[in-house]
Length: 309
Image (tube, rainbow, N blue to C red; front, side, top):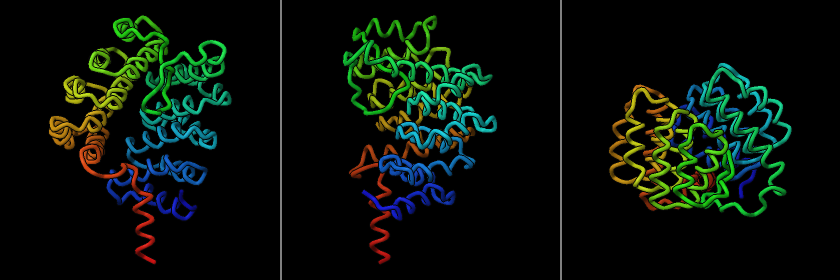
């Protein structure tokens, strides 16, 4: 638990552009874990930052918090054509994660946005909210459990057969929402076969889809995904949103090969890729070390206050 002044101290760390990005990320995820309107208000102040990566993560965290207090700022970001595509996309996805019927109108408005990543995201968010509205009568408790406790843009598929799920995942004639459902069912199943099936999804057409596959592979932290993640990260013609997510996934897997790859692309000319590699290396240090938690700004802030007093 944290009092308001402590949360404000962590919020100031997040908004302090003179701090290393890795420290600001830790502050952000600390605020996400703490929750509440004060934390949301500080996160919401960060959308003027020049870092698209940071703004993307701000929107992601607001969605994961599932607090309707964040809906106005996320709606504003989605509508803002001056924001980067990956930031607007994440705002749309966050609205879907919160799952309020009040967001349907704006999400439907942007289902045909000229930016394809935004358009596809809003289509998925609409489908998720509509699914939530009907899930109790249609599917009940038949879904596989999510071992990662994330709020996903689609529920897992009812099917548990990995070869069948793989075929559905890679079938680009199917609606994106159904393919996402197969993706999350494969993730929940776990294991090498599921990881390799998902890794093939990094060759599909939709950049939004490839980015979500990379995110899921990062959650699974299985070394069988390293080769394909590294290939997409190395591809300078790949969408930066996908390359960024591949970098973060490699940081989560945190094997020696991953560290070497990330160190190489920490000098990439694409800012969002470079920054993702820096943050991913910090995540790797946490995964490989003896730190108690990644989102450690609360304990550090309390210790700082104690020292000052």
